[in-house]
Length: 574
Image (cartoon, rainbow, N blue to C red; front, top):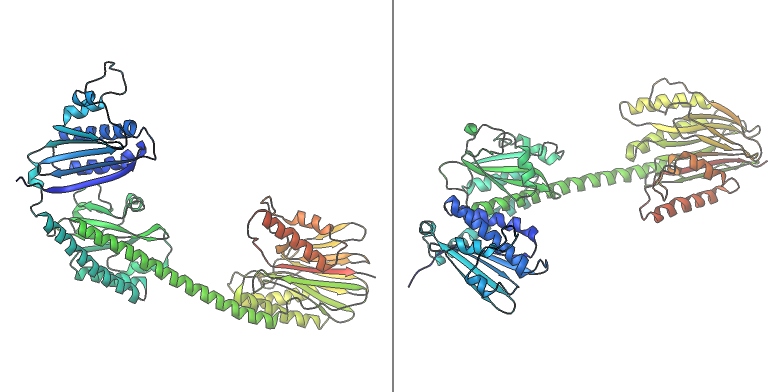
């Protein structure tokens, strides 16, 4: 009895869509090209493949993309087979028995069966109620030379042996993932696992040129770092779409910027190391001339290595980010405690005959960057401030605490706001040194009897005076922020508040937010809105503002991006 050996069997299911022809054609061409056939024979099979697949899509499935087709090819002994299955009835028997060219030489169709029948050695077709099968084949004596010598059972046992070997290797790699303290440590232990397994002869590690991950910076100290030079941009792009890339030293497309004669290994495989579905590093494994070519077992092991390295990198990044979040959370807890002790948010302002004072601070976070306070002072005056610290956390809380300690001292005397501002500016500048932090604010002293208001506006939003007469006055910043320049002098603004006038102080959280049209609310619209609130008490103004800003965010179906919202109002009643 004749003995047939299958060197390879390929089967694929695909939709009846011409867009799928390209990907399946490449696999067919790669296979047929590896059989050692003459170039003319390879070209002939390419044409037959295209015609059979096109007929199955066009005539069998009638371009119905919901229909499934099946195509197979294989070698048995010295015979190569190609077969298609489609849901159509197939061509007429007369065409099968005697295919011919169309009478019209310009006709776009009618040549497929003639081309197929003219090239192949034989064919067979069958049909049922739901499937049409066309099988063609051709024999080549040289194919018998590439058929495997092992029987089918031995091939299965070899595959099982590879699987058990891979499992053992993966187990050792998994233990390294669990036990590694850092990604660099795991990388080192992983290479040792492969070295012990006798797999590659050379390693090359490289991070994406613009990567800012500290975990990858540590790889620069590994002896394998850029051992083959630098990877070409085309290799990075290729690894975004493929799980690995193979290369040889004699190939003109060597993917490293190194002279082929300087490459220490004959061939190799490159695998991507990914994070968040993007390649951030690569590992190349090289093999010298004394080893066999890279086979499917080695490729599977290398792919697994890439997956495990990517997993270890992601775990290391998550651990670092978790530690960063814990550190920030701890800093905010400390800052919150400091602020509660140093900055009494929403402390009740003093009461005074003929005046109404309102202060509200609504922080966006647990730790506010804003602070406002009104305190009684000497000679029928009160002093006040509204500040915005540029920064968050412990440093910002300490900075605001330093300011408040000076502000309390300011309230105990008769010092002018300009002199106080110069004094506290120097104290803050010395404390801040080279840090890029500062305070914007308004510091004032108000004479309760005369209504005289002395202002220093240091890099802060303007002060708005709404007159009972309907006039609106705006006073813009006339000084730099506090803490930026040593020995800075500060100028004050004098104005008078008469009965019925209202003076408003705010931080930028009141006007730097998006409207429902997606535009910045901005200062001009805020002042216009503020005029409509002239007759409302401070509590109502806050309520109306929240209705305005929150409803805008809801109409855009977005989460409101908030800043601290601080408001201070001085109203002269009689």
